[in-house]
Length: 280
Image 1 (tube, helix red, strand yellow):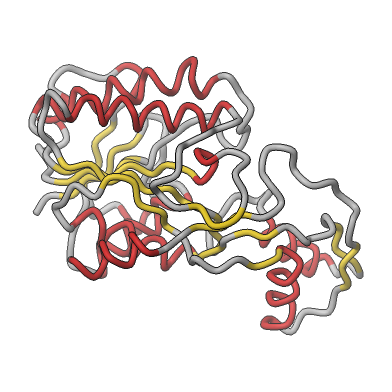
Image 2 (cartoon, rainbow, N blue to C red):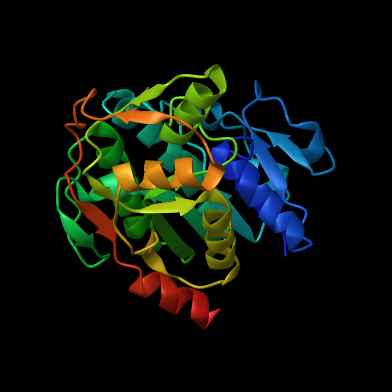
């Protein structure tokens, strides 16, 4: 089975490629022309495609994959940028529509928990999407467009709503890398919010396994939360990292305000994810 991956050099992409390798699959890496492929991935086929200026017969250039794991998305981590629906959304839809119409049968796309907007508590896939920032809005619109496309062109769609991830290779402005740098500098305190907000976190290695399993199932899964299903306070999470690593650093709680684009307490319902993975 041929598997292609867009965004293979990003945080999620690198782990997805490694997971495919563990399953003896050599993926086709779909990259922007300006992207440099890591030496460890040089043995895989590499196809350079600009999503905003897609070449003719892109599906053929990609080797006509059976499955596409679509991770690419520009403009992050600025969730409030209008770029997400002004530029990214139309380019993304044109790209995926062209591939589906050319013969792509199985498509997995990564969405976001921000599609749920300011809804609190456990979030399940049957709930109405209510995005309240441009990034969440654009992702939700792409999902809707692809569902309409399914009405005229047959293909399997798995739309994975990612919650919070952590692990090797994540953005330097993320919580865990910031904490690590503070420890390495010998800082006595780490500045953060009060940390009472409840979130849903998964290590990136587990997320990669779930994404690959869902993509390889060959089913129309629809929307699937990729989450732990277990709420944890950000403070407890950080304290756990400090304890597990034997670090010596105190927390300066309340230094930063809470983000205004997400509710204080939300996490994913994992029931559908469990069913989809078991069914495979």
